Image 1 (cartoon, rainbow, N blue to C red):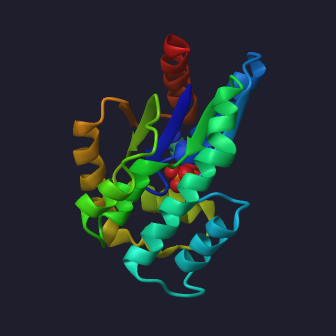
Image 2: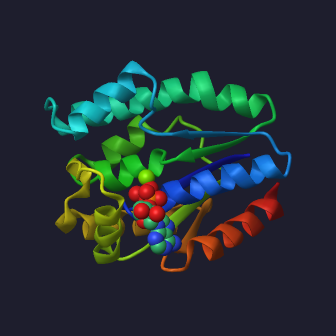
Length: 194
Ligand code: ADP
Ligand code: MG
């Protein structure tokens, strides 16, 4: 089973992807917790440096890097783990490309670029207002990256909602609930499908 976590920065998706991996582990189900952009690959490193303004890329160039990162991620990590019977949990995946990337580049071009990548079996999309997301990001104490500019979040969420209408794998999660409540809700969905 291939599970993706998606949502605005600060909505709690990383927290819940970690908790799900821990819960699977506790229940004796082998899993791989991974993320995009990838952490260890040269392409993932390039992407993070662009997001941190260490160097600049065109919007299309950045999206091509995200897609290249995804191709390598699938081939080297996701597919082998799935073939080996593991549950794969990825913190961000293709829908982040469409929701965030769709802000600056043509959505149809992005969809075409990503159309051969396998879709998750389940995607949890965290729904939280931009204002609340920003409060949580401030609490996390990390630097604001390119994508975390406050005024953009509402538009990114509109993209996510459009994608959710077309994507049967997406389950929208009310991210205003407590961390424990959300973890239980996700666990029920996963157990129902495992
Ligand atoms: P994301 O990965 O979506 O950007 P994180 O999981 O990093 O979000 O969470 C952002 C911050 O919000 C963290 O400080 C985290 O502890 C906190 N947080 C996560 N989920 C909740 C929740 N349900 N309620 C309150 N705070 C939360
Ligand atoms: Mg995160």
